[in-house]
Image (cartoon, rainbow, N blue to C red; front, side, top):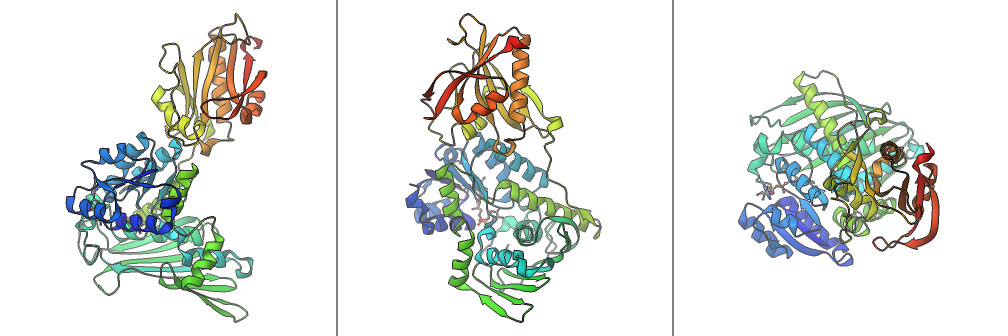
Length: 500
Ligand SMILES: NC(=O)c1ccc[n+]([C@@H]2O[C@H](COP(=O)([O-])OP(=O)(O)OC[C@H]3O[C@@H](n4cnc5c(N)ncnc54)[C@H](O)[C@@H]3O)[C@@H](O)[C@H]2O)c1
């Protein structure tokens, strides 16, 4: 598995080292591939330390890897993610996804529809302190979560060890402390307490950097009835690099995270008067038992890619945090007006549309669903570009293709003499499986071909999908066989289109 990096700064270095520490590098046969950074000294230093090879462009990195880490200025993320998805690469993208909510949601939609393994840099999802606090807060003994106070402060990161001038340029960073830094805090509030319904916020700009707020104070209302506050500050106290303090009040338990984001300590007090503290290695050990996998985000990402399965936290999780951030900014612009957090863009079955698509548009889903992420297996069919082949897909309300199919004029020995069409490459996005989208597509294609005078529809069906075909009036014909490309057991199924 060839891993490439775009960006060779602070966070790229963090991920590179963390991947090495995880042990997954050796386990999954990671090959350190290309790195590109427009700052050649940074690229060279990163390559020397990590074993990557300096490339002359981002395209050279993308063309030479299977997995890419996108660790560049925030404004670069959407374009680079789109390029990675066009090449069907597994992708790890730093937070924030983008400088605008619209771009972040578009990215989440694109990546989710492509089916590639994806992860975002909301690394606190694997912080022992927050994993343990979430566990404590959701235990029945704690009662309901009533309130939360979250404070996050650090020196403004255009100085000190960050020394990143781009964080002072709104065209590259998008905004200030809330988007650039406290999107982590929003994600933790959603993780530990629950979904956020409504917010009201104020902001200030003491440093007078255009569009870069350095204080945000927000009041939060959660869907589960809890309420809370978030205060996020970028100051000039260089003795305070990045510090969080979280207090969670449940009906019968008080939980308090302080000190280090990762190793705590976490304190809690119960209504029987008992007081507890967990920190350091003991906290890591307890938290890791709660997870499926290890606490190392990079090791778990690479292991998921190797196994061809999803990882977490995904782009869709980051998009949800972006919606809260946007509601807070919107409130602050309105001097604290109450704002409802937008719902995730919905995919209403009523607006699903069956449309003709191109061969290339079938590829992401064919790869994700039918090739099980094995990029070495061919994804094209010989008949793909024949003039009489039709590719039909389902677009959701947002325009994303969520199911694909290809209809090839081809006789079958099981219906000699009949005009026949073979249905190939039926694939439905994981997020839409079980929703009836596949059936909608199949029936639309069958209707279209019946009207055109085709007599028999047939397919080489995976045995695991025979139930689906039976539901749509197909019958199994002939002996079972193992398909050469996938190595999976199959049967031929046919449907009489003249039956009405
Ligand atoms: N998950 C976290 O906790 C965390 C922490 C720090 C930063 N970040 C995020 O990571 C991203 C990078 O931050 P950083 O602290 O590493 O910044 P940085 O300034 O240290 O590094 C960014 C690098 O990207 C390079 N770059 C810019 N445009 C590029 C392009 N088109 N192609 C390749 N490289 C390009 C820059 O030259 C720079 O070296 C930001 O989005 C930031 O918000 C996340």
